Amino acid sequence: MNSATEMLAATSQPMRHRAFDVWSIREDFPILKRQVHGKPLVYLDNAATSQKPQVVIDTLQRYYAEENANIHRGAYYLSEKATQAYEDARVKVQHFLHAPSEREIIFTRNVSEAINLVVHSYGRKFLKAGDEIIISAMEHHSNIVPWQILCEEKGTLLRVVPINDAGEFLLDEFEKLLNPRTKLVAVTHVSNALGTILPVRQVIDMAHHRHIPVLIDGAQAVPHFQVDVQELDCEFYGFSGHKLYGPTGIGILYGKAELLEAMPPYQGGGDMIRSVTFEKTIYAPIPSKFEAGTPHIEGGIGLGAAIDYLDGIGMEMINAYEQELLAYAMKAVGAIPGVRIFGTAREKAGVISFSLEGVHPHDIATILDQEGIAIRTGHHCAQPVMERFGVPAMARASLAFYNTREEIDALVAGISKVKEVFG
Amino acid sequence: MSDLRELYQELIIDHSKRPRNFRALEAADCKSEGYNPLCGDKVTVFLELEHDRVKNVSFQGSGCAISTASASVMTESVKGKTVAEAEALFDVFHNLVTGKPPATDKTPELGKLAVFSGVSEFPARVKCATLAWHTLHAALQGKRETVSTE
Image (cartoon, rainbow over all chains, first blue to last red; front, side, top):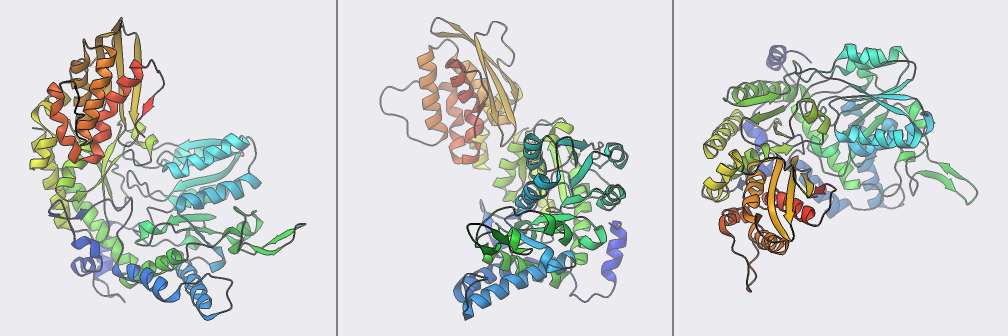
């Protein structure tokens, strides 16, 4: 990542996109107009799920009103239309990740399923007892538990790269964990609990130096900045559509073709076969091999619409704006007496996790909710992170490019109200 | 703000900041652990029984204001009660925080527990208010495994 100043400079250069105007962008998201408990909604739980622009909502509506048919089978107009729209969405995702081929883009339910696919297909075939898998101390449970399931089944071992007090990934500790038994590295790109951007470029280089494949959980990265899987050179990259302003129930696994081709299917069913007899089934080529059954068609098409929408704004613009807003929020929230911020990595994206002295995060969230402010509290599906910082829970405000400084001010005022209630 | 004051009544704030009977009980006959994975709240309830009566009760743990205050007021409320009376009180309390009408027949007096009536307006907080009670119930039943609100 560039520094914030470099990114701000970048926004002043001539762009192919319109200038970034948060107030006109907010018009694209109908839910942002609503009130909660009589107050304007201040939605600061974007790391959990993002709100949807009208164009995504319209796309889903239009699909069912005008194009609905099952894909990859009907020799009739509607089925061809639906198939075309679904496959177009795959190409949009390919371009969005800068993947070499649309054959390397597999539709899943979410990033959890993307990781499970790699665990069950790649892991079961290529990993054996005694092999080591390296993750980081700030993984979401979805990049911990699937590997633990494999470890129980196969006798593989999980190794964990520690983090420092700022919530930064320790590359030298990672280096120490690498050994001839290391057979896979699976780390998050951005921490959902701390916002830390991991040095995945170096992680991948160091792993590749020893011929170890790398999986990146990009769920918290793709909504915030441009990701280029060819530049990263990772073997696998996954993300969830609903965090990227698309529908729920649709996710992506990118995988290098030669690996995907060598991997067995994840699930069996319709659409993933070339021919079936009771004696032998020949699987379809990738990506169909990994997409058993009728997929989440409108989800894929809706995700394509979300990507088009983001392309229209530009991820550089989004990143520059969010970095500026994050810096403002970190300063404003951090300045409140009694507030402790968790996650102060030099490179971070859209997350402000905090505690308030003498007040449990759950009470903070209830009081903020009365002010129309939505934040997350709890362990954020990252209990090891809570343990690392010695707290049972954290309050977390997470940003999107439709959030404003005024909303951060509302958050700060809301936290003052919390202190008022607790005297 | 009025709803908030309904929830965070002074007595609740007071008990959350200065919980009563907040200690381990050396002479405990049974204890039980409760856990709310949603907010990470943990509570351990210690019980000393004499015949069929709660001679002493205490708790330890960490949690939000509602769960801490609820545990604290609970210990005050059930001390000296018979097991059956304590269980009956849980029923009444449960109805109170979930906004169900109290049973019409002879129900135990709520006393201080009445301050938790505001919880019924906050469905997300019902589990906070009942965690200690579920844990007490488990302790009374002699269960020793962790009770989860999920």
